[in-house]
Image (spheres, rainbow, N blue to C red):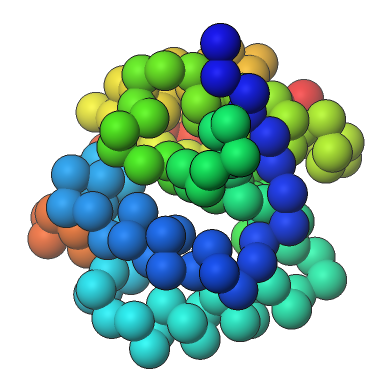
Amino acid sequence: MAEITLREVRDEDLDGIFEQMRDPEGVWMAAFTPEDPGDRAHFDAHMARVRAAPDVTMRAVTRDGALVGHVAAFERDGELEVTYGVDRDAWGQGVASRALALLLQEVTARPVHARAASDNLGSLRVLEKAGFRIIGTNRDFARARQAEIEETVLRLD
C-alpha cells in the first residue's frame, strides 16, 4: 500500500497544485472555485496569502514521496473549515481520506466544518469516513458550473 504523508507546502509544489486545481473534471466536481481557475497570477497571490496566514494550516499531500494534492484547515466566518484536493489519478484510492485523517490529527480544534457540492459523492464519502455528519444544505452559485447548485454542509464535533 502506498504511503500517504503530509508536509509543509514548498515553492516547488505550486506548479503541481496549480495544475491539480485547474483540472477541468476536478474543477467541475469542486464547483465552488475561483472565477478563472487557470489564472496563474490570481493563484499565486492566493497561495502567498494562504501560506503566510497564521490561522491557516495548509499541507502538501504526498504518495510515496510524490506530490498528489493539498489539504487545509482555515477559518471562514468564524468557523474552522477544511478543504482538500488530489490529482484525478489518485481519486478513489483512499488518498484524500488518509490526507484528511492526517490533517485532523494535526488540527485538533472542534467543531470543524466542510462543504461539498451535493452531487460530489466521492468528496462526501471522504468527509463521512472522517466522521463528518451532514447538518444541512444550501443553494449557492457555483462558478465552475455557472449555475446555482445544492451544497451539502457537514460538521465534525
